[in-house]
Image (cartoon, rainbow, N blue to C red; front, top):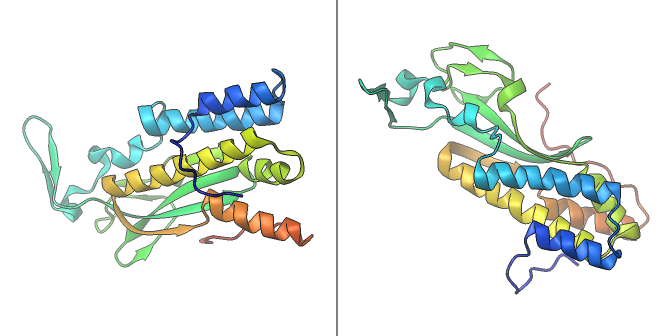
Length: 211
């Protein structure tokens, strides 16, 4: 049901128009909430609106000594290397999220740290820097689709998959990504579809645990 389409990717506004057409102008609050959340995520990724990546990409917070970098008299920063990160794609109770986890020496860490010589960021604040992408309630919307969904709902889920995968691919060009791990939107869709066909409960897959 989640087959790749030969036609060009449908834009979000076109999906919303399709939803209105199917439902004679009526859009549920649930659909509107997920579409709005996806629109905010799309705006951040494509146009830089309210970009949560700023704190990760701010070279002034990079440990230049650890990364072989320097700052010239004009304030321009050059680095031989970029900070290392792992990327995790996961579904939480809030929805679909992309987390960035930094490295210290030969392992990942998640807790807050400041001015550690071996750390590749001067400051790591997980409250500001860990969750870089979120689509609220997407897991519930996917489950709703299997019971009451229509063509527009499926297109919205497909679009969410494409946006999130493109976001990860782009992030891999901006930082030194050591690994990408977790569950894609399509992966969760396929898992949920199988479970629901078999009449089995759908659980949120655990991707990582540092606590």
